[in-house]
Length: 337
Image (tube, rainbow, N blue to C red):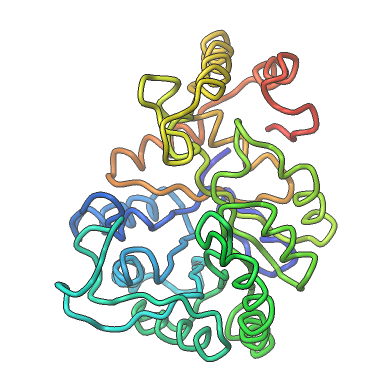
């Protein structure tokens, strides 16, 4: 599939490119990158036809939104789709007083979780100011999953489904945003949110990949039924589907366990047999599902971005997917390109 191919975004009137630009790395996650490198990636993605960009107040304590706005400011605003998130309010602070981990040399703001109605509205308005752009198309409620919130998650989820939902619903009714959703690391939370409220879309990180298809058990079919769009991020499961089963390979931000290493090694054997790069299969697999119009990839360098774009367009024979299914390496009911 070509990166610039546009798909309808669920039931909305938005169209997004199949390849999206994720901006956590330009928020300096784990490692610092320069303003010049950040801008070069935005411009390179734009020249490749990418027209969907996703950011968040959390990414780099506001730095990602500042850089996103800087790089997109002189583009025609109607030519691209922009998503950001709510759930945290940023407050100016001295750099020495900010705990940045896992971000590096990030924005001069502290962050506080806030899913209240007023906090959601403040988050939205502050994001517009940091971006310096006239509108945001999509707003996701950010990080109401157990991965992020631990034992607080049930209470946080209830607040988000009550006051935060009401604020987003009001913004949608007023046509200040075109789509509202939830952005988390667990498909079960997305499923519960869609059962509770009338969401348009979801951003799901790492939970629908070559290694994980449990979202087919209920969540993705419900999205098809409701015509809700799903943006998939983290398609490499934080590393191993890009690197392969090498020593020290990462799976969900930790060293990959033995069973995952074994499964990836078996997938790699099929890749060699059909001359398919493992990362190309990982990137193209997610957007084969009819509820998933776009894949969000984050990169640190122009070279990484170019490599992802090349993988996204690499020809993959149907026999490759058939072999994965026949060996039980992906589910029989998983749609494939």
